[in-house]
Amino acid sequence: MKKIIAVSLWFAASALAGLAQTQQEAPAEAKLSPAEQAIAEARQAIEKNPNRADPYSSLAVALARRARETSDVGYYSQAEEVLKRSLTIAPENFFAERVRVWLLLGKHEFLQALEAARVLNKRMPDDVTVYGFFADANAELGNYDDAEKAANWMLRLRPGNIPGLTRAAYLRELFGDLEGALDLMNMAFQSTPPGQVEDAAWILTQMAHLKLATGKSAEAEKLLSQALSQFPNYHYALGNMAKVRIAQKRFAEAVDLLQQRYRAAPHAENLYDLAEVLELAGRSDEAKAAFAQFEAKSLSESARADNSNRELIFYYADHAQQPGKALAVAQHEYTLRHDVYTLDAYAWALHRNGRDAQARKQVELALAVGVRDAKLLCHAGEIALSLGDRVAAERYLQSSVALNAPGSGEASVALASLNHVQAPK
Image (tube, rainbow, N blue to C red; front, side, top):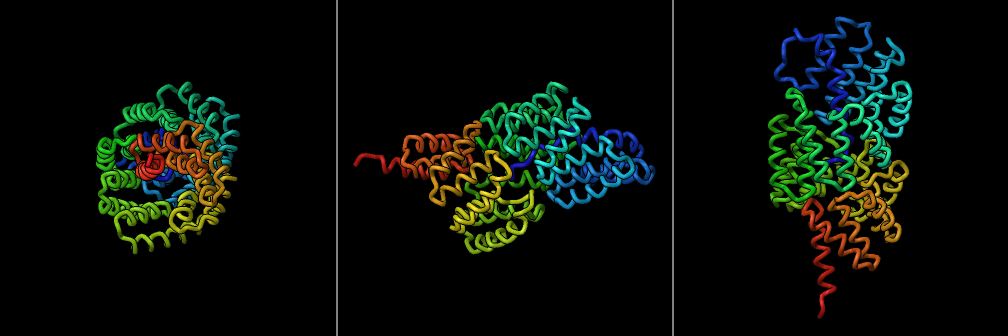
């Protein structure tokens, strides 16, 4: 699953609360998702009061929520158009300006979102949602101290609020405290209202991701089954369930799950995951075709903020054997953000180009945050091994293997090779 910001669950729910109160007499639409229901209610409110700004802002929030439900970024464009109407009716109204920042985050325009959030913070210094924006943008840019401060402020201003808990959980994960992250996610899940089924499914999926990160695939499977029961065909849950099947060596089922996800969310990064699993399943011709389609699709969006450049880096580095192209893409991403996953991709591209001293610097900067990621640790081990530092290589590879998570398999192979070389003859 692509690393994404923890969308402000409380902001979306509270933004629609007043609207929902005005629509209590409306018949329930059992077949509609929470976001679809909110879209319908917002449009009804606009019909009744076309000259009020708030219903347009509420519609923009609902459209953004639908973007997460479906992974269809077209809803962000619709939301932006609706929001213009709100700001035309009431220029600089705080509600609409908050929604605008939320949309910037959804489109991965993190620097712009950060600047806009700072403006709002000056207007309303104790607004919990704005601190959530600070946490999101700074985490994605790699400004982890600032992200942590913002998440702490959220929990001080409103103890136990769900978006504060989910953000704190994401940061706990990045700092290496996977157990603490799971506890916080569970607290958020327990506080989620029963009707917010997509929110609950998202949190369950994040909990499953944390279980997978420590090799607990059976527990992850139970959580994902619960998520898919609450929100069927949920693209995030399908992607993680495929990881469970990969861990179980059930590659054909993983292919089916990722094909289902790609039909629901036809993004380049999802196609990359599918191509890799097709390769694992021994369907090399299909994998080759999927990789080619991925490359074309990824290149078409490479200059956008919301892109699949990390996957493109690994494609060029590990599959296409074009290290120069991998490094060019990595250098571009590195100018924009220094989060741990971008540092890892940049380090791997440097390694594939024989620039191991620079690669080691970047991967160690990522690890210094505290992150316990099997794939990242494996990369660190292989880079150290290329530099002749067998002690560090063994330490990193053993740490990766101990997690028994996605990425640990490659570390096991590298560690076995290292031990074979070291064994006395």
